[in-house]
Length: 397
Image 1 (cartoon, rainbow, N blue to C red):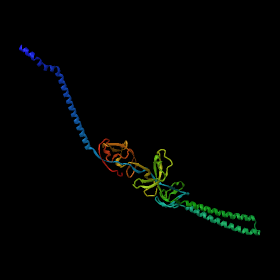
Image 2 (tube, rainbow, N blue to C red; image 1 turned 90 degrees about the vertical axis):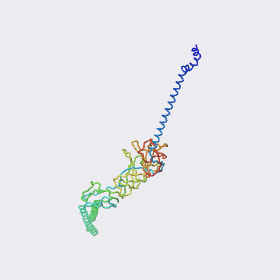
Image 3 (cartoon, rainbow, N blue to C red; image 1 turned 60 degrees about the horizontal axis):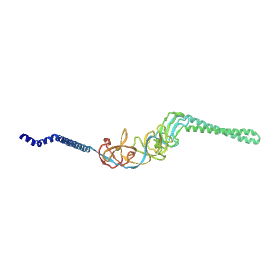
Image 4 (tube, rainbow, N blue to C red; image 1 turned 90 degrees about the horizontal axis):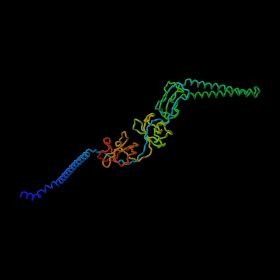
């Protein structure tokens, strides 16, 4: 009884915790486990985020430590004389070919050589004239014979005129004597003309300079037999004037005019010779699409006809950025420069260059002039690299 009473009395109180565990404890336990797992996951995510940030910071620190220091310039814009660069050959401005004007013969003497200065009418070479000289003697003798005949005919006529007044001869005889005298005088003139022609032919045996100038070429030697078919024996540059025959593109030729100044530099020398355009080609070569700009040059020993030269021909002014040669790079894609942006990252910028001046290379396209352009070491950079820029004042290229 007592046992049962204790059971009954305490039964409900002792069974309540058990009932709570059975009926409501299991769900609460699962909730606790879920919350614990979530907290652990959050902690693990925070740990990985922290490690990532630390690694990124270290990488940035490493990258900053390895960044190159480069010199940069802001070129601005400069007004410079625009010039057209071309190449071509040197030649005599007016070349005079000299050959045989007469009948020719064997060369007796050559009096000048290549490089000699001659005056107009100066004898360059002498042709043997032994036969022609005898012909001149013969013609001179013919004049004397004809003159003697003319004197006899005149004397006969004078006597006839005196006799006709006395009636010893008729007027017809006087007419015959007059005709004989006139014929004799005509023979004198003919002989003199023949001598003059002979002397003229003999004079043409001398090869003479048609104008003053510089002998460029000599193609004859003593003993050589020359004639009308011998071709050019001497070449003379009239007054020693030279020129450069510059090959210019069709587009550039349209920018030029007679009188524009130019600077010509022969190959093998750094000396530039001043000149000016004196003639522009009226036609364009249909294959090369080029014309000839002929630049007149005064005589100088360094200007040798047939030599090769380059010319810088002024064609106006241009306002554009100027960069030194070290800043401009090139590859299979063309010319380019490296520009440093606001984040100090390097970016590639394609450019188009123009004339090369004493101040630098003209950049016609690709830059405004306000950019920070890498001055040197561009060959060791890649687009996207972070650098430490050091500003440098623009200098002559």
